[in-house]
Image (cartoon, rainbow, N blue to C red; front, top):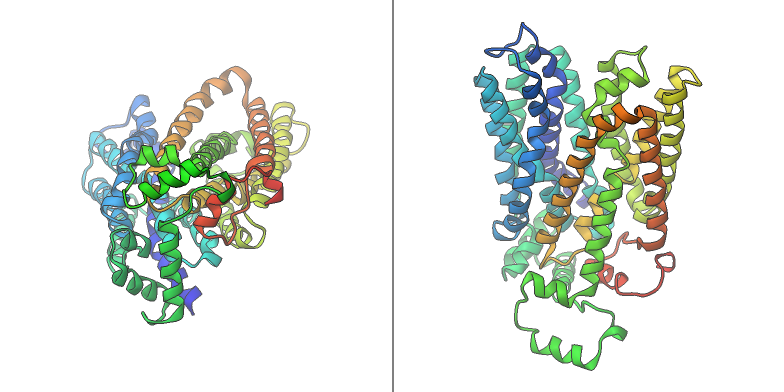
Length: 471
């Protein structure tokens, strides 16, 4: 019963990801309309405006992400979710009522302020879910984002323009309203010294009585995570122990905390590297340039159908990733999926460059690549960032990691078209494949297994000098 209760609350939070998928995929079904003479706007969009139409969301996310890391700790997890869900409502309201090109572009920028939802949602879910299902529930963000893409592709191609916009507006309003029925994260409440409220929150999410043993054990776990031994015992010198005792009752600033905790520094470096190599495995290119890529790879199939299949693949893969996350573990998924993605990219690159086989071969390897990416690089870093950091600095380090991810997204999207013009689409996939193989090697050497472990135990894995293979 507790599992389904937590799954239901996770679904409510992940509705924000669905709404984000709607917004990010909406240009795919409307850019052609807005550029035509039959546009629903006051005039057709120019080429520059069309480029802004698809990229303004990423620019806005660069501004909102730093704020989200701070607001997670100031407002709390619940109210941060509500706050960053509101730009979606505002954006769809403008789109539904404004018929000027400038208004639509402003709406897309505003909607991009919700880009940090992928930072806020996993943190919230990770803190109210049981450790045994934490990875599965956290990875639901990707599943619901894929559902948003699927809804956008399907409804965008079947509904009248205004009906589509009002439907999407209704979905975003519903998602924000449902968040108001949730309770604050118990970890955040404990950080504020509200232990009784934290116990009520745990009882609410687990479906238990406040005085039950399950609730008391969880409160003890949270209390321990908020007062951890940051380094392995054997690594602590008498001087360090004395310093720890003298500063025990003093709350450290973020920079002093980072300087003091070697485990946190190593965990942050690991997450930054994983985000970098995951993004440069290239699936973001498939998402943003889906129609042109599918037209090149599978020209005998409608690009709309190919895009819908792609969205379905993302959703199904996300569901499978959620299951395998707790069965196979984070490390195995990251290594094996990167190897498969690398192989698919190399084969797909040769097919696109040399055309040695029929088009259905391109389809098979392209969708297999999407599945492999979703199972590993598209999901594991999102789960790790939510579970490897201590509550005191989780909001800020998560913000740093996501800010870096947005920069990497901008770099790969900015470089893609010039590289295609110089090298062709085939060699681009050689690059993606090489990065995927490098990801597997790095994870084999440095990524510890964190499945089912509390955060204080996870932190000790980053101070052990043993190879990750032995963890």
